[in-house]
Length: 119
Image 1 (cartoon, rainbow, N blue to C red):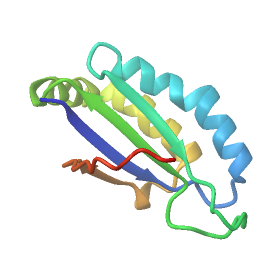
Image 2: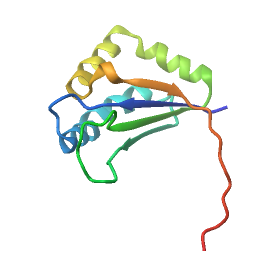
Image 3: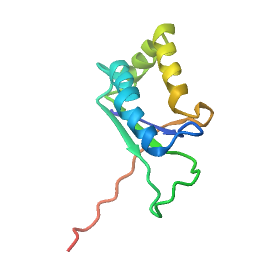
Image 4: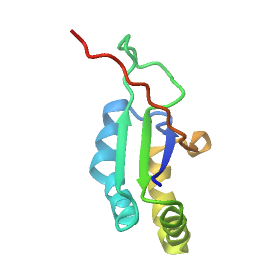
């Protein structure tokens, strides 16, 4: 059964949203792809943009979603990421990008409603 993790991430103080997205997608994403490769089946970043268009200080700037085919593969990925060299690379880059004190990771229990067709 698929295991989905959701992580809520906040950009570090003083970083603009465009700079945050540009760095994440051009640099940090590549670290994620490297460490998740061979384990995860999906690595999605959902950058949040307030509907009112303001760039106020919100709780989170991006929702990260990662799917694993099963719990054993998820556990194996996190065991591999615990290697000190891998963890050092991840943490050093996270400190350039995120307010690490505000990171929150959850497992997802999904419920889907089937809605009638529009129109």
